[in-house]
Length: 103
Image 1 (cartoon, rainbow, N blue to C red):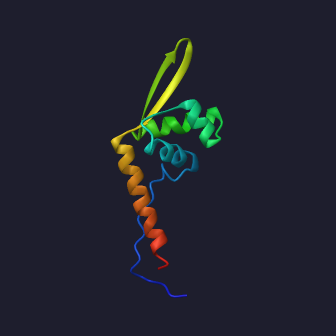
Image 2 (image 1 turned 135 degrees about the vertical axis):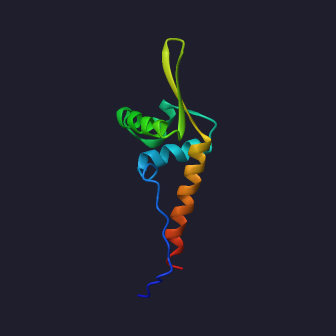
Image 3 (image 1 turned 180 degrees about the vertical axis):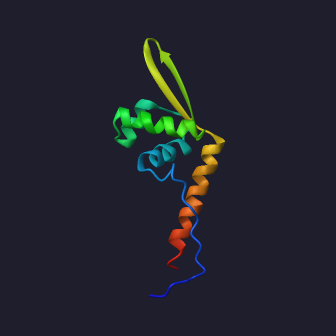
């Protein structure tokens, strides 16, 4: 096996390196917004785990979270921020350094 000493792997954003957080960001990157129920259904997550991961993404300012009501029913809506969009793009750029290393 040849080892290329010139390979430089970029660091992966640990916040996005979580399967559920990456799934949420992947959904939001192509949507204007998504509500909690939609994200829960698409990711197959439990409500509790999804809530925790959404909070982490929100604290990092990767997403904005709006809580409101439709009638008497609570509704949580998430939107990706410019910071989140940039972090997502940088994550995949960094990931590509790993896939190119074997070429």
